[in-house]
Amino acid sequence: MTEADLLARVQARVDRAIARAELTADMGFDDVVRAVERAVGIRLRIIREIDTSGWGTLTGYLTLFADRGEASIHVRASDATLYSQFAASHELGHLLDDAHCTGPLHEPGARERSSVAPHDNPTLTTPEFEAELVAEHVAHRIARLLYASPRVAESSW
Image (tube, rainbow, N blue to C red; front, side):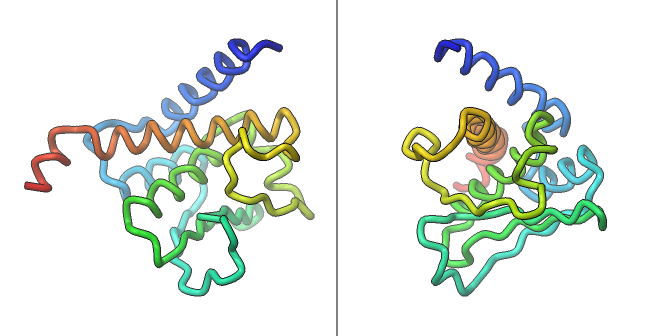
């Protein structure tokens, strides 16, 4: 598979993920979270963790309880809101990625992964690498929806 093929597959998965949640530019972050809940059929909480001393480079992680229809995304309380929303958006990307939702992240005994960029983590398999790229691209698309509109710019004046 060429790099162009990989990027085309990633882009197609990102497009499906954004469409799946019906995300639009008039949404705030809480609206995005609620849209993801509806899209994947779970209750979702964002938890700002105070004690992150053992996290290393981790900026956020997802815990899914499929049998209860619940998930939580944990982010560092010490991070700026914008940064923690981006970290949470990356995890939302994993939930929305139809090709990844049944993958190793949600299987019992899944290993924890560092938040090192996919390009810098040689231990990722090709499917894991692709899933991380999808989640990262979804996070960027959510950020553009939230922060690139005139509505947001005007509210900061």
